Image (cartoon, rainbow, N blue to C red; front, side):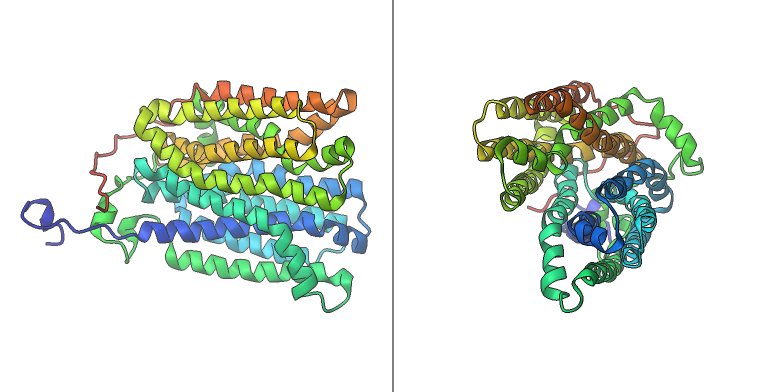
Length: 450
């Protein structure tokens, strides 16, 4: 029999296949393309506004529209992934947001742009919740941080390269016709490439190792099998009620809300700060803004190893909460230090440290949602992402008002305070308390390649 090695100690135990890495890699590819489709619009916004006659005030609403629906639909779409499987929902999501990206090329005015950005937010909202659920089905508890970080790293890379790639595609690759038409070609190209990414994901991914033709039994046995989701037959509003009655999940949501108030400064208020405080020109601002984003990619790469190390050293309770809390406090310190620095580049160095630390903690955030989410990880991560994106929407407004009434130093202090609040919430997270009580999963040996 295929599993005879279990009963006969004289037989050599076969090694698990490494299909999980292929599944994680193609999921990271989906995350990369999601961020490219999300970020490319801001790079092309000036050309779009010029051709369509969309003013700066109207364009600000268009840019913010994405975050509104992206936040609101995290739980509904994440719950669909829990019920119907992350492979199906994530594939459909990739197809849908690729079509939305392509449809942007057909826009004729502000209303059309607003509509397509709202739709893009809906279509992308379930991607990370579904991806977290997929990783949970493939990864043992001791490696969830590492594998989750690979997926999130794909998204960070996409966000970092999107401005450069988009500008290159518009000017070098597609810039052969009328200049005001190049942006339309970029959206069409990205939409087509997104459909190719969806096909690749569907071909490689499966909802569990046991369902994958390339995975052997040993790899499948590394992760406890999951039975029917106890909430699978319940409409998502009732799932929302289960999340809303959990203090653990409120702390989880508050952590991400306060984190984003401080972090989103990098992509919203930082250019204005550099121009007003240091008189930086546009070229220097672009380079300076890129540095923290690159640092965040490095932090994401390190974060998976850091998360799994903390889990092994501190255990499931403190191995999730303490690392997040400590990182948040250190982020607050970087903002306070930045108020004392004399040059623009020294401030950028401090903010790069902050960006590195935030992304180093993200795999731990994902692992926590996988720990407490059980068989509905998508809804759990979606809850946290929802509040995090509400924080992202609130941050530029709050920080602008603070700057208007006080000074940039006070803005930095507010960002530091938001990280302190995030740390206070994070230290009280308990990965041992599930969102919903379920039958205990069987213990399985965590097989490792020697």
